[in-house]
Length: 131
Image 1 (tube, helix red, strand yellow):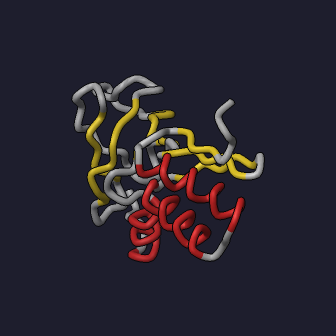
Image 2 (spheres, one colour):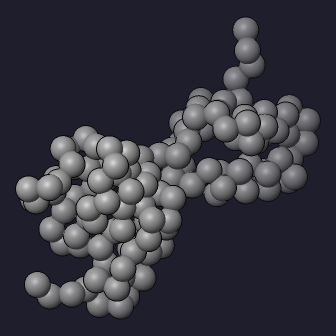
């Protein structure tokens, strides 16, 4: 097996930082968790493999170029009717904090509501008023 370049490994590290949630799509290994199993990335090794902690207790790594996973959004936001998936809650919080600081009035209240819901740990955060 040919190992990926350092640039590819660095890209994988940026795309799958520790704490990223993923779902297994395909893994060709007798010990593999079943497709659909969810897990948390612990890190990336120098071969580009994802070091994993699967929810079923398995620690089998995701091998670069062989196995397939998809990222699970950490949070979803709905603002002005537009839904966005965020793979990092921290990035979503920073975005809405900056938006809140740069706005005023009803727009600022929308951003503040989403920011508050993000800080509360909600999975879907919206600017819609509760009815």
